[in-house]
Amino acid sequence: MIKPHNRHGMTLMEIAIAAAILAVFMVGLFSLYRGGSKLSNATLWAQQTINKLKLACREINSAIKKSTYPASITFPGDISENTGADFGLHHFNGTMYATQTAGINGSGFAGAKVFSLTESTPAKIGFAAADNRDAVLVYHVVSLEDNGELHYGRWQETVAGTSVAGMARPSLPTGASTFATVLARDVESVTCEPTSVGNARSPLLVRITCRIPNGETSRSEQAIGTPNVDLVPHTNIGGW
Image (cartoon, rainbow, N blue to C red):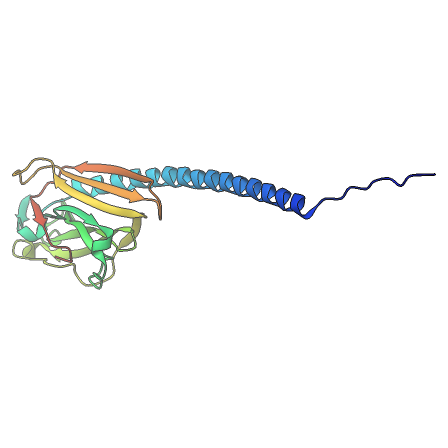
């Protein structure tokens, strides 16, 4: 008599245990992948941000060094100069956070001013007096927007040398900007501080801090530029 073979199948309990083990394994695998992906993204963000910040600080340092009072040189060398406060290096005194700049628009630049300065270049040198009475004024503005973008813009105008001494520019001239760009993104704050308290011509330290969106990773870079004009601090956030 042939005995039937005993056939063993998986019970419902065994299937449930196997499914639970597989689920735990998949959760661990997904967490490992997610953690690695997050770390990779943070590393890439940090590298790109550092490069951006270095370029931004180089641009800022260069702009500060170009600061000058409006002047016009007339043949054979007479200089008409305006050292009014409008043409100093205006800066927000302290730390400005991107969240503080919301709603400040419509002034020709994006966000709130971090600093602004004027660069003056005689348009002609060495010509006859009648041909050498104008000056080119370039206005440099760095501003911070509430979306975390740090903007840089330049405005340019040509003025007659005879009007330089008595002119005032409490705001940017009307007209399109000659150049505009975004220096950095994901900016959390920008700090402007004179390196020597009480010194009107003190080098200005500008520190930019960026933070990865929805994360803890942050990077900072600073520029220190020595202006050729007096520093004019502001404590209000706005267009000044």
